[in-house]
Every structure is written in C-alpha cells, then in structure tokens.
Image 1 (cartoon, one colour):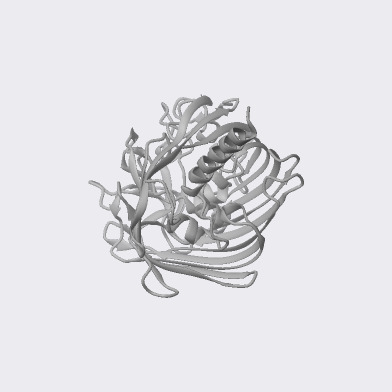
Image 2 (tube, helix red, strand yellow):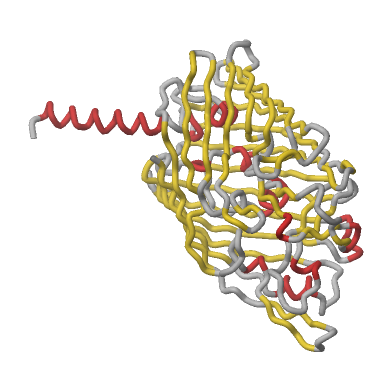
Length: 453
C-alpha cells in the first residue's frame, strides 16, 4: 500500500474516532460533570447512544421464614439474592440500559439534549410493567457570564456516582449507599386507600403503587458554571426543582433544592478521564407529600477523587465519598409475595419521619495493568436506620468488589466484577425473618459491555 494512502486511511479513522468521542467528551481542557452532562460540545453528532448488555449470576439461596399459623417454615428466595427490577431469577441476561440521544445547538448560546431510556431497569419498571422513559430533556442558555441556566429534566447536583456518565463507571453494580439512599423511588402520594401501617412508624407500599426510580434526575431549573485559574478549576451547580419524575408526576407541594461545589487541580488531559485531583461537597432537600402531609428528606455528602494516566500503563485512580440522609428512608421489600408471608415482608417499608436516618460511604481504587486492562477494588458500607436499632429495624450492608475492565476505547469497554456481600441485622431475634435473610446473602458475579454509537 502506498504510504500516502496508508496515512490518509489512518487520518480518516482518527477523524471518525474523534467524532464519536465528541458525542460524549468535550475537547476543551476544562471538564467537570456539570459541563459533561449538561452542556454539549460545540461539534456534536445529532444522534448518538449506547447499549449495555448485562449478565448476573447468584446462587439464589432461599431463606426459611417460620409461619406461626401453618406451624412450619416457608422457604423463599429473598430479593437480595434475585436480579431486579423483576426479581424473578438469580441468574439472568438483560439489556440494562439502552439509550438513544438527540443533542445539538439552536444557536451559539442555546444547546439542547434529549434522551430516551429503553433498557430493562428500575427506571422503566412502572407499577411492575416495562415502560420506556424520557430520561433527559433540557435546554441550556449560556448568555449570562458565570451563570449558565438549564431548564428541563436534570441530574440534580449530588453524589459523584449519581453524576457520573455511564462510560465512566468502573463497576456494574452501584455501591449500596448510592442504590438505596440516592436512587430515589417514587410512590403515589394520594393512593386510593392509605398505605398499611408498618413497623416503627413506617408505611407499607404495595408494588402496584411503585412509580419507578428517577435515575438521579428531577424536573427543574439549574444554574451552573466553572472557572479556571491555571491548573485550578472551581465548578458549581444549584438547582430548584420538582420532587417527581415523568412517570410519577409531582409528588410534593414544595420545591426540591440541590447544590454542589467542587474544586479541582488539573494535571492534564480533558473530558471525564482527565488527570486531576477533585474534592466536592453537595446537599439536597425535598419535602415529599403523603396523604396531604409534607415530610422532610435531606441528603448531604462529601468526597474526593484522584485520577491520573487513564488508559496508560500504571494509570491509577482513588476515590472516596461519604453521605448521609435524614427522613424519607426506604427499606425495599425483602421478598416477592409468597403464601403465608406477612405484608411487611413483601411490601416496601417507607420510613417518612425526619428522625429516621441512614449513612454510608465507599472507597475504591483502580490501576491500569496495560493500556487496555484495568483492575479495580471497592469497599462500600451502608448503615440504614441506626436510630431504630433497639427495635430491630437497623440493617448494615457491607460489600467488597473486585473488578476487571477491558477498555477498547474510552467509551466502549467490557466490565466484570465479583461482589462479596454481607448484611447484618443487629438486635433481632435469632429466629426472625431479618436474621434468616442476613444469613443467606449470596455473593454476586456481574458482567457488562458498554457499547456506544
């Protein structure tokens, strides 16, 4: 092959790669999740998307629950050993996320972004039925210096793992504290009949009243921007929104408030994989309604991340984040509905009062063994309802995760991970359902391909 034709072919491949990356990663040196998630690059494809096939494997160990009326044990596999959102199997293959996106600029100061979600996940599971969702829909106005204004369905400022783009995930499975405390589920605030009373001031929400999760997004208005001083960068976002989603509608008569500030020292690079050290603080407050009464829901956290040498041998990453919440704490249902089990075992327990609390953290590290192969380790901890420990409602979730990734490009990769999971149920009787479930928690294997187009 002539040298000129070979070089021309290489240039064409390089140009196509850059065009694909532009749909996800801005080429400017300043980068943060406010810009990456909320503002389009100047040169961006009108249509783009990604698909995530997933494989999950667990043993499906059942728990024995003693039924006093039948005077025998009933054996059922708890949800912790089943794959959501349907909780029908312990080993399954599914398309967890399938996203189609439309984005661009109306003029040099107005950008738009719309995305539909067609995967099988908790956001598309509405009242137990598969329902594709409008996941993102926002317009950004960049007329005011230092204050870009975003209107629509927005990722609310919050925890790092709630703001990350999917191409930046290192694990298939979220830390438990993110999955339970931040991935907010919605329920009908005006059900046809009041929810049944559960233990310790909770209410029991039947599955047919579940309106899905919000995928960390809320309808509202956000002001955000960033500023660079040499290697230093400051970024902020502040939002006023609606406590609800497209499927759930507005579930509060009061606004949701959310804010995050972060400071970065940038060593080099750009996009979500730039080399930097970043620290952040964030806060959320909402007042969900139930039967005409407003309850408080507060979330707050802090963390930092160090990332250097992405897709380079010995590239490394270290991240830590802590968060806590007060009020409106969810305890997902322990089982699917089984003969003889009490409603508190197969319905979600929602603890709405402000004195209820939960907290947790995760710490993770990663190392590139070669340009394409990355090894990761993570420990996450979630302490749910420690204020109700004396009455047996506290649960402590601990998980070690070992993961391996093969990066084909920055936005296309294969991930695999093994999760060593334990659940502690302090102060419960040895023959209680809580003790029975905590004894049979399976470890989990999960594998995922991230395919972008």
